[in-house]
Image (cartoon, rainbow, N blue to C red; front, side, top):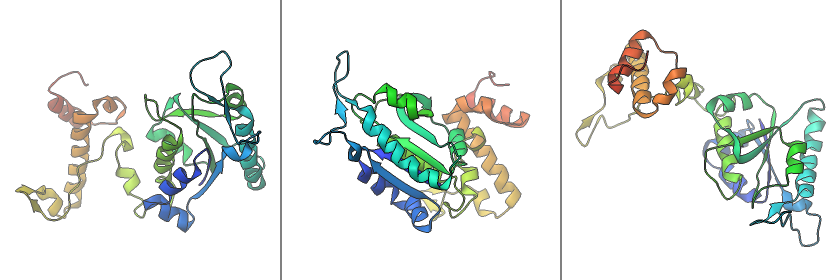
Length: 252
């Protein structure tokens, strides 16, 4: 997976991605990261990339030219590897489609992804129309810039790239897999502040463990994210468990 980030703050992206799991994956070559500073493509001597909006209004707007030339610079390198490939350009904006695990799974199948991080009051609409393929939000709130959303997306996508996780099975059992939250986790000591680890986890009985994991995922989802249940593939017995947890008969 090759990540390309168009940003005014390359160091913000590089520092975050160089840590933990993504950092190890970059070193091992499972991921590649390229950050390109939009300011390097400024069209004036002061290296400014923003200007006042036409029609007035508060704040500044990023200019189309520097963003477009930054995009062209990235695409010139991608084209050397994949001349005929259409590359997704993701613009991080609260006006976009809210990011989900399913979207991450789809993006993880791509060879290259370009992230466009905006600032100020936004980016000139004309260049967005020219280059952006996907408008994506990480939630219904406004951030200072697109760098944090880009990092959230890259972290989520990275975990689905083969080789990035030491234990490949862990991506299959994490929250939102099958539209269920992950079951609770425990480690040593077996008793902490008077609270014991559930005995089934100490039993070593594989079938009982799998049954417990599944039941706990259903229970936790019903308690914390019941909105996910409509898309989950549950058995009649599991639906009865959901109704018991919720104390209602609205789920069939």
